[in-house]
Figure 1: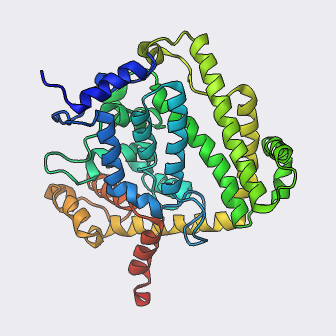
Figure 2: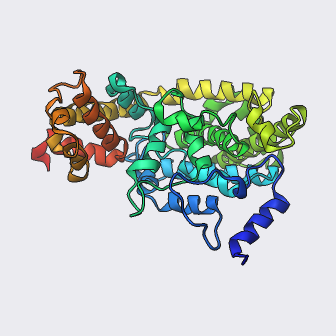
Length: 404
């Protein structure tokens, strides 16, 4: 049998990966069968499919915490995703996990987020409550399985089972029908656990950075937070004369390095304590293996409580969040009531439905029935895919036509 360059990667994984990592050769494959690529593994192909898809590009215009109209420097969903990916790869490499799988999970983990951050998710969950609610993780799975339209042979991106599984493992609604193929796999892979922790690490630190950058916080405000105070003292001990933005950057870097080092140390202890010597042990574990120490967990809890009180509930943030929710609620109600207002691509999904379902659509969002459920899902998909700016523009087109 002729060897291919992809076989070299498989051999490299076999020689480098820890026995509890997920090798490409053991993937459960894809929903739609494809021939192996000549020089890329299954997870390398996943990574590139994600980077090239529409949902990934739209992350550039979606809020992380602050809407994109404030300035050009704070995080969006895209920059947050790239930062999570970089941190996750660093951790995966040190633990000898599959970096390509880790990167694919990290790059895709926020694809299902709607506009306007968590406020937007709350608004859509409220709008869709009668129809099962909204979960950005399951929406991400739906996006890569159905809504992306890039290949003539199949719908979606046809990603590997293991990348798709990560959406379900992190979802709140484990009883949803789409989770059925993933219910027998056991605990999450270590690669997925790494991304989960890298996500937590990144948004805590970078939300501080953004809040300082636009004046929601001052450096002195953070002296009441123990993790910040310790990181600041360490930074000053190395550079006693450091001030201003350089000091801020030094402390943020110290916070990241501290948490990564702690995560690696605690995870290695967990691997030994739980006798994780092969992949089957990971699947059978009763608690997360990749985690922070108790000390850092407590420090992060205090830091997150501070962010909740001083940043996420800041009146400027709440005003932006409330405005975004108003846009989404109004758009949802209008499109459900008048499906013919939907753009052609989404309207085709509606007109393709059986006539008796289309005739059953109610004139109000609250009405029940198969017609309402059908159009509510189509509208939910449309709204979830929007960027912040496009949602606002769509609102203006529908409700303020004179301004167009």
